[in-house]
Each structure stands twice: as C-alpha cells, then as structure tokens.
Image 1: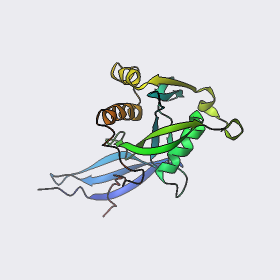
Image 2: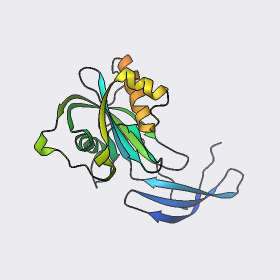
Image 3: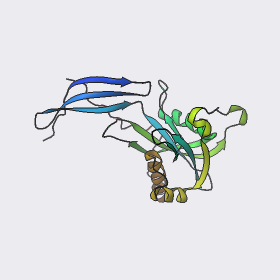
Image 4: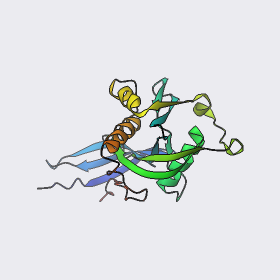
Length: 205
C-alpha cells in the first residue's frame, strides 16, 4: 500500500533568486510527523559538446563550497523567465566556451541530490560545433574570469570520471551517458523538447 507523504505545514527559511530553503512537516507511514529541510531549485542545464574528432570540451572552474577548481561541463542555471532548457544550454555553451552547435539532443536528466534538493539538470549533447565570432563573445566575470577551457578525447574524459579526477555529478552523468549513447549508435538520445521529469514537493494540506 502506497503511503501519502502529506505535508502538514511549510516554513521558508531563506530565499535567493536561485533557490529557497524550506522546512516541511511531513506525515510518515507510522502516523508520526517529522521535519524535512530541503532546497527548492530553479533547475540547470549542462552540455557535452562533442567535436568531429570525438573530443569533448570541459571547463576547470573554482567552486567556493569546495575551495578549489574542478572539471565540469559547460553548464548553468535555467534562470531566465520563460527560457526553455534548450535555449539555456545554447546560451551557456556560447558564454562559457565560445561555441555554437547545429545539432542538439538530450542525453539524460538528473536529480543531483534528491535527499536535500529538487534540483534537476538536463544534459544535452551538442554536435556540429563552430566558434562564436570574436566580436560576439561573452565577457566572463567572477569565478568564470579565471576558468580554463580544455579539450579531451571522450574516452580519456570517461577515464578521468572513473578514476576520481572528475567528481562533478552533472559532468559524470554527461560523459558516461554520452559514451553509453555512442556505443548504442546514439539511439538513446532524445529530442530537445522531450518532457522534463521535474518534481515538486506536495503543497501543504
């Protein structure tokens, strides 16, 4: 029998333009109520940009919560009102690594940390790449101003993922998903407008 995890009450603890921290009082299967703290997130996109030589582009970006730079996909928030995830991915690819792509597909969708957040990131595969003209390139600021951009053979990047050199969750999903999709002749790719498996906590009763 499926239990209804009913939300009895909700308190907002903190809010930014990107996320909210809330506390829900939730009814458990033993009829007790417990508090659950979590983050309600705006959502994100990541891009596996694959060139004709089978190389992927990765960025090495400082992340303050870790106190160091780590390898990541070109990625960013879906934080412009009404912007579809695919358009956000096009924007991030141009802004972070100065690339455009003619061919776009969906590799995977991932809830990055479902124990504490409803954040969903959609991972795209971008192919048929070309550079953004010099006069149209984005000026990178803050952590992005020191970000470095490097190309790796996809198999080399997968090895980096499996040996602990890459730990970013979206990057792991994207690289391993791209390699698996390639082995299947790209048959598992989905169109850019495929429905998102977005989930929201139930409203308080």
